[in-house]
Length: 270
Image (cartoon, rainbow, N blue to C red; front, side):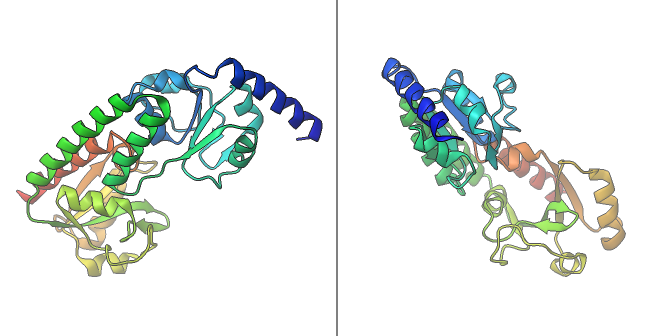
């Protein structure tokens, strides 16, 4: 951007903020879980811009995109006259420029259930939906308590984050906590990484009872056949999960948690 262009943008933003000092926020929701949280606390109508994969609920699909969660198109974003941007990481290219122009920035990338509850309350406060956020946290907390109350003996699992290269969840990954709450023991929980690369031999040596495969850009049946060729027929069980319910740290993660617990208890009972 040229210096003259920036000056003009600053003037326009100043005029806009002065005219809307008491209006609701105009939000850029720059991560899928952020969209889902905002809609869940009834702040969805305040979202003026989003990023790729912000696709839930259905209304989110109609929100203009201003880039990805890894890079923002600043000019497209500014045309939407935002007052607040919620981003996974302040280091995302474009965020600093928006902040310099007076747009408030909030980070949201929870890595625990407590973190999800904290971020819901934080976004509730930022959007004037504190009451709605409090109620949502209460409901989700009750669901988590029920899952914990019904947790049975831990089943050892291998979680196939990706197949080429072969990636799994390590001890630093939030998914390891999710697995534990559902009643599973991640066989690679001792690896002090988020998403370590492993080989087939390491998986065989870990001897998981269950292999969990997210249905994300892969043929799940082909992956099951691949693992059966190594373990043998009926030597390991499989659970297919919806990645949108397992990998987004928002309200729908609790749907994924409950579904996973049910699936684990079903395979354990066979």
